[in-house]
Structure formats: structure tokens, C-alpha cells
Amino acid sequence: MALIDVGGTLWPNSWPIRKTDAFGRRVRIQAAMPGIEPATVEALADALIESSRPGDEARSISTESAVSTGAEVLVAQCLVRCGLPADADTVRRIRRAMSIPVSDQMKLLPGAAELLTEIHTLGMRTVIASNTYWRDADSYWDDFRVLGVAEQIDAIVTSVDAGHLKPHPAVFEMARRWAGVTAELCVVIGNREENDIEPALALGMRTILVYPDDPKPATSRAHAVVPDLWACAKALRDMLDDE
Image 1 (cartoon, helix red, strand yellow):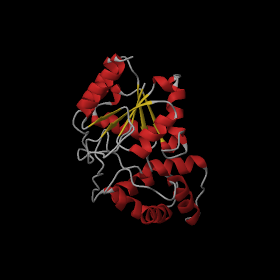
Image 2 (cartoon, one colour):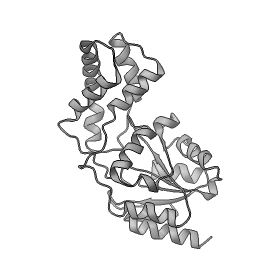
Image 3 (cartoon, helix red, strand yellow):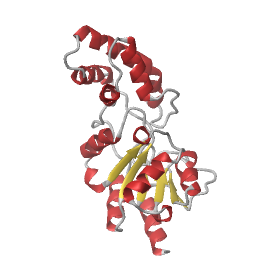
């Protein structure tokens, strides 16, 4: 099984912030809160957008920015502030509404589609294993359908679904349990030594560090270090040939 990171691995580190994002979120929040007074929904949208703005500004620089407050905590706080119920289902719906879908401004990194195809050709399953803020697995499925590669992905596990951010092992373990395989049969592909490579090695998984949108790393403990996703596909083939 191949566990693949997203930001900086399959698509760029830089997230294209659009002027229409705030408006789009308002529309999505309204759709997620049927039957609620428009003024109350507008106040909720104001609170959410204002509270999350520092995070959005950070993510305009990097899709892997550290976050101090979890999205579901932030959503629950805003709901309570507006006098609205903060039950788990409402929090989930609003968090998803805040997840801006990809558009034609977001492109996969060169070689990404070919890598996903090669993984299936090699008889392996592909699991997305990503740190996210607003996005859960369902949001990512929507993204990958738009990008035309959903059929090459078998499962998606995010930090939102697992309840912990990488490097916590929860994302990797959740993916491994889904596949029903041992750690030795997993290969983690990512662009961050601390978030992808180190925790995977600690679990006994094999690793490929790829840096298509990052500077060349000075050092790495990964089993293979490659500059792009075409080289990543070759490294994966070589790794399986050596078994």
C-alpha cells in the first residue's frame, strides 16, 4: 500500500487564495444552515471568516501551515457565540462549508497522475494520508474528482478524520487498518521529513521523500530521496523489485 501526502507532494505548497473565497463560503454556510434566520447565518459567517483569517493568510503561503486551534473547535466556538447549536453534526456541516473546493487555479504537480497510475499498475492500493484543517475525506474526494484522478485513489485519511495531525501516528495507523496490512507492506510518500518520513519509519514503514515543490533537503533518513514524481514512481518500482 502507498500512503501519499498531498500539499507539496501531489499538489503545490501554495494554495491559490481567490477574491471570491469569502463569498463562496457565505453561500455554502447558508446552504448548510437551512431554516435559520438570514441575519444569524450572516453573523455566523462573519465570525467564522474573521476567526479563521490568520490561518487563511498562512495557507496562502503554504498548504501545510501549522494551526493552533482545531477547525471543529473554532466552528463550535463561533456557533455558540451566535446562539446556535454546536452539536457534532452541525459542526461537521459548517466545517465542510468552510472547505473551499479546488478550481481550475489548482493543478496537480507534474507527474502526479502518472505516479497514481503507476501505483495501481504495480498492484498496490493508494491511500491519501494528509494533514488538513477544514478538509475531511469527503472534501478531498470532491477535489480529486475535479482534478480527474479520483479513480486512481482507493481511500483517503486526513488528520480531521483521524483526530490528530501528523506526525502523530493516527493518520498512518488509520490508513493501515483500512488496508488490513502490516506496516512493512506500506510505503509512505511525502515531502516533509518531520511529518511524513520520521513517523513512518518509527512505525516500520518504508519511505520515499519527494521534493517537487521544495528545496532539495540537506539530509534525510528516507529509503529514497527523489526530486520529482516521475522519479518517485521509478523509486517505488525499484523498491518492489528489491523485495
